[in-house]
Length: 434
Image (cartoon, rainbow, N blue to C red; front, top):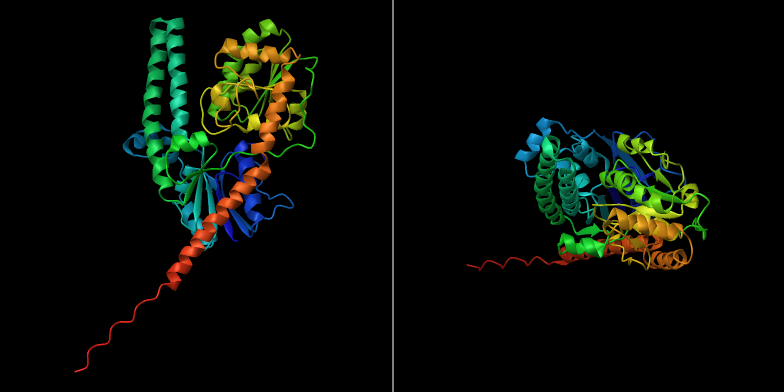
């Protein structure tokens, strides 16, 4: 079997959850046969695009994506178009031509990650095609609008006067832009879904939200550790870990909320609590270290040491879509999780069974404090969470789903081709003799 993966990043080294997902897809397809990779690499990437030893990729091509253009002129142009903002600003002019020159035209299966990548590459059709939407951008924007509205109301109540009114006006303008963009994303997602054989999402929840007939679920997965990093007892310095790429707005927003709203309440119950942020930081997240209880670690070569010192994994996500690999990582490593409802959605995890859910600062702080006190609250959660992970979210489960999907579409295409070739063209009737 011959496959092609078209990706919005190079999967190695692993710094993002989306790269873990790509690695699972590539390994699954490579187990079925010859697999090529075409990666559209972000301009900010500094690491070389080298395939690790032992990864069975046949051929690799990369093209660099320019930095997004967020100028006023580009935004005005977006208002005149019908595309989502993120798609309209995502341009790699030579990418479609380069793709056609490099790859073959007769793949048995093609996996494309994200709608913008599909658009950048010219909506290619090189064989039976799956589009991995991963996150539903319209739902992400809608949930962000809800969070912004709540923040806008609170800001106006606290500040009042001209300053509060100006901030409220800016937030309302942002909400209106998000509303327009969400509508465009929904139309766009349906448009690209109609051009591929299957659309892949991370959960049954997103499958229902997307609402297209060719949507299927391939969950996120995580490789089970040989020895889970979690510990039974809380450490001498109770530590809450929030890991993620903080250049991703929902993570950055969650970090600010955790420090500004949750930490003061948590410190009243656990005075010596420590917060650690692990992952690519923004200037805003780096600035959170003005609080002595907060450490911004940045990117690390391996997560195991950070997981080993964590007593609680926090997932303070207030808006978003898809599913969070950081939750699966915690489940696999037997570390208790406190999450917002949105942070845990789509995984089938239940509040007070596999994790604790809380959506306001007071409840989130109390949930963290409950687990940081130790006692009997921790063990039942991590037992149930690990069981759920092993049943549904091991990497082997994800690879099996990808392989089943690839074989199904490849066989369907082969069957259609055979039917076409077996079709007999009737001979024209002989002309009557005169």
